[in-house]
Length: 176
Image (tube, rainbow, N blue to C red; front, side, top):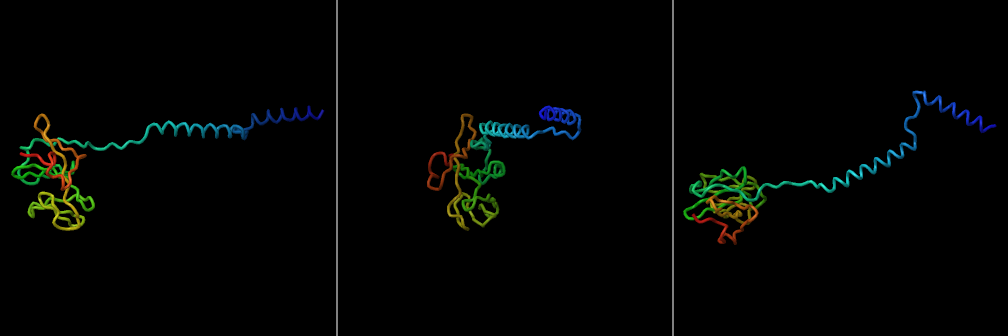
C-alpha cells in the first residue's frame, strides 16, 4: 500500500514540476554528459589544430636588383629600406653588402660627406668597402652573393653571406 502512495505521490510531483516554470532543465546526469562531450570535443579540435601548424612566411632570399649599368660609382642606398642591402660600385667591381652592423645588428647609415657607414647605435664606422675602422664592431660588414642571370640582371642571394676571408671568392663581387 505504501508503494502505491509513493508511486502516486511521485506521479503527482512529476506532473506538477513539468508545468512549473522553476523546473530544473539541467539534471546532474545531463550536466555530467555535457561536460564529458564538451571536454572530448575540445580535445578533438586541439588534435585537428595540431595538424595545421602556425607558419612564419619569410621574405624571399633571392632578389633581383636590376642591371649593373643602373648603378653609378659609389654607394647606392635605394635598397636599404626594403631589402636591407647596399650596392657599392667602384672602378672594377660591384659589391652588395648587408646593411647590418656586425656589433649588435643595427642598420648603419651611409654618410656621403664623410664617405663612411656610421652605425647610429654604438658609433661603429665602416669604410666604403665595409671594413671597420672605429667603434665596437669587431669585424667588417658582410657581403652577399651576387650574380647575373640569363637576361643580364643582377640577382642577390641573401642566404649566402661572405665574411672578410671569402671576399675574393667568385660571387662575393661582380666584375664590371
